[in-house]
Image (cartoon, rainbow, N blue to C red):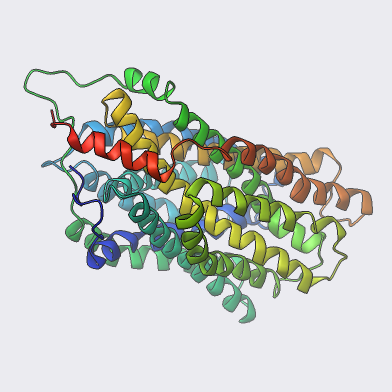
Length: 451
């Protein structure tokens, strides 16, 4: 049974707080790893944009392979009845080591240095994030309580991202180098993690698995579970929309700092402020999306948010160099849309897990969120692996500011994501699991006798 048995009850605030606080730590390195890393290693440390893009692509493709492996393992193998906590505990240590090495590189670095420590970082990150997300889906069975859990978790995560952005902006004003700034973020994530992960492991309970095996019964093969997932149409539909939206978000993220400098003319003092505005808007908007989802449904409100992001990106080609105030508006709107991207789809995925349990009689929350994470990472890998080489292919040169080359930057940065998001909206618009249908699914599941 779920940790919370009564559909109308609220998850205890103390349990919710202990669960969501680690999201702060998981999110703190997001800006350095996904935004600063391409230019840090590609430009400042001299590896080159194309080489760095290929290394990031290889590392993130490896990262996608580990997701289903960890998802299947944390569904099937536990320790002392716990299926989420052991993986998170070990993964946090591995991720901390990898984070330190990636964000505090030595004076002389090589392609192998970046690749090896990225693999370590991503392996540990996966061991934390996959069981952590699956655990959140298991904390409550109610349609709106699940949105509350994901909204708080992603709000705290965005707070971590904003904290990293604020630290980067403050240190830039103090004259710190970019390398020194992101090294400070690595240390902050490690120190805060030492404080909050024991709280998570000690306070938040895990539920009993419905399909615990009887003596002599063999566990279902991973291949069998995967085949059932590929027959789950709501899962495939949500996963497709999530992947495309992630791709549409990843391309601007990979080019964000390059666009600010070479498309907008923003200096090192202004660039961190735009990042800060973007993520603060995401935090502020989450309660708005949460309230709207109670009236219009999670999937429909997510589509509204994606449409708002498309409208904001349409402004970018018309922004002249130096139009910082207008681009701040773009950051506010797209940042607000990010709040919906983070808070609503995982709550929808929790409902899809219930549907899968009802239809196929299998519990696979870890594997489903592993494929979810795999989709996210594949989208990010393709974003950076395609966007950076595409700039060089179209002749973009960091040493020049020719109009034709800047146009290529703007098209890849803003127009391509609009096209991709429109396709994602079309996929999600009439998503079948509404609040009423989810309630019916829960009634059927709760009426079953656990095996």
